[in-house]
Amino acid sequence: MSDALPEHIALPVGSSGKRSGGWWGCLTLITTKGALFGYLIFSYLYLASQTTQPWPPEGLPKLGFGLLNTAILLSSSVFVWFCERCVRRRRLPHSRAGRIA
Image (tube, rainbow, N blue to C red):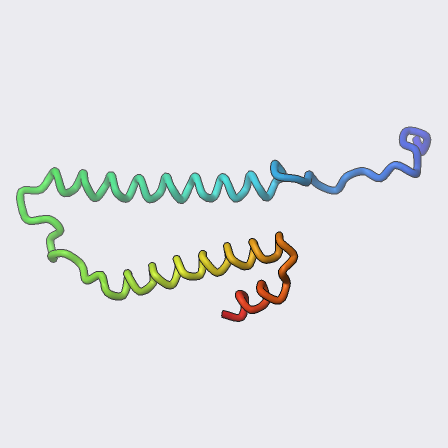
């Protein structure tokens, strides 16, 4: 049984590259999140079309806190993009400054 594989050949532990398991996991996560938001939007519009009363029942929501959170999320995405760009171009001091910010 020990003659089945030579000892000098190392078996891969996992897949690597752009089509690895982590890549597929992220793609699946993004797809399911997109589907969830699509279902929520569809249910909102469906409920709005089925009622004879004003929709939404309690009036429009206040957007102040939600807009602040959205701005924070988008700005953090810009910082992540900037840091990744600096690392790819081997500008490590700039990437450290971006991570600190």
